[in-house]
Image (cartoon, rainbow, N blue to C red):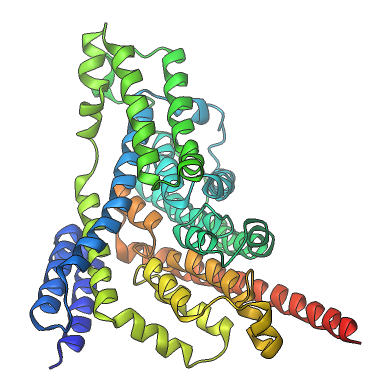
Length: 449
């Protein structure tokens, strides 16, 4: 049996173990780590052209994401420990499930465009713990947070890593990607939101405001507000930091965490009780490291398939279809299984940006020009397609780790509605794109005439 086929079989088996975590009673992080190691071992032993530098390169890319996740989770945990989210929870007075779902979803959608889908999902998940006591009720809201975060990130040039890639490489411009993908992204959120609204009935039960173990911690309103605004400000500053310095986002997160760390050290140095429970080392002990390791395992496993050529073969197979809309829809659906970053990277490598001279010779290449329909639809599909499965996006993986949401539960309760929203948004994009193309053709004919 070819090692190439063996790697596919191993990936499918590993994916099944992750999906069946609860029935098998084997932690998904263990399965993901084993999958990554086994795939790289097979490729190193039997693969053609394996270079040690390749695994180091992929580890570096994975570390950037993991460190960003770790930093963001720590900042959110610091805010949470200082009761900073009270400033929001006290303003959300409704306990009606339907009203609350709409408030949370719309807030997530627009926050994701400003921050990014991963950071927003972490913040909103922490917020939901303060608003909803029942675990299964909270899971529905967390599922909608994943959908809204991915939809919100897709239409913003800084909202999702794949959109950032397309923007930085010059395939799309900031204003055009916003104008032409905002409505499809909004539709992709509104469709499942409307459906889930009818599933939820009644009132939510609020959890206790302060955990019993922290009853003796003295936090003033002034301190809570300071940590909240400083923490959220640190998260908001990350894209600004990246734009100014051109350094990776995880360094921006580390900058915010460092500032917050210094402030909390100074704030609690005179109160030994607060210091022992609210300093950053104490907060770090609350971070779910198994989720971090799961992230490392699944990203490194997909990176191995990319290095071995599986994703490149997949991209070439899609290219045979010919229709750019179908290709992108399939890329989006596949991104729910494998990471969307290498898929988008492969697409960028396969299709060079068409110049005006190229379009003059072949008008069909209009779709591949800067701000062409192919690139904009790719941003939409790669950004929102990951919502189909809970491990299909960074936001989903983060929420899954924080709330221990079952893969099968998400598949049964959320995936179908996510698919309907995804296809509805895609349909809206195609209609808009066809209208724009038709208008362009008319104007072109007028100019020629």
